[in-house]
Figure 1 (tube, helix red, strand yellow):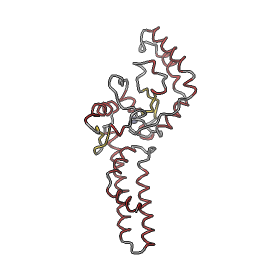
Figure 2: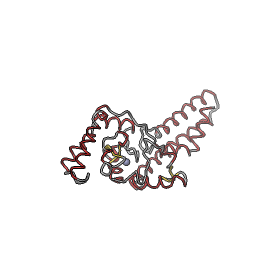
Figure 3: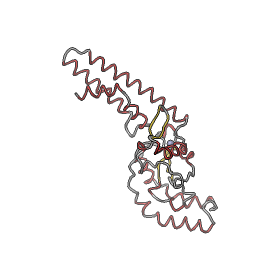
Length: 246
Ligand SMILES: [Zn+2]
């Protein structure tokens, strides 16, 4: 999970949400509760938020990844619009722009109708996840005792420490180690250079290796928080940085 910047509310949502909310709440009153609205009627009333403009802005601001687990659609399937505050418990939040998050099917199903107002979890549009969560090997853990409740609830509710995520994280660890090997080789070849020309040429190779490893940490790459933390702990990468910046 990485910090996301919330996009601009699409005009077609802003212009219609008040009326759509009135219609939905009237139906809740008529049928006694949200869950008692007949399925067909409920579907007609609530499906209005599924606008192309809403999906597009959520995809753009989440780098086309799941806001919770940082998976890409090719890993966990279609990323859909998720209501952070569940619409089944709080129908008036159904058309609230700030209540939308792009989530993969697995996170969405895992979170289901968890009540975030009673037991808060991280909304990455509002909270910087790095202040709450960090990686310890392939697992997410709280950054401090103070953050334990928020971290543990988020991890549990979204299923962020499960085999479906250990697998891609371990595959990335393999790629990362290969990139690290390349950096180490480039450093050792640089150290053997006996002329300025060779040194300058070999420094270029180190820069290329740095760029390939940095690629994994870009926000539009899957599991970028995991890769960013691996990079921060890499001694080879730090040594290469010192060489290219000297
Ligand atoms: Zn997900």
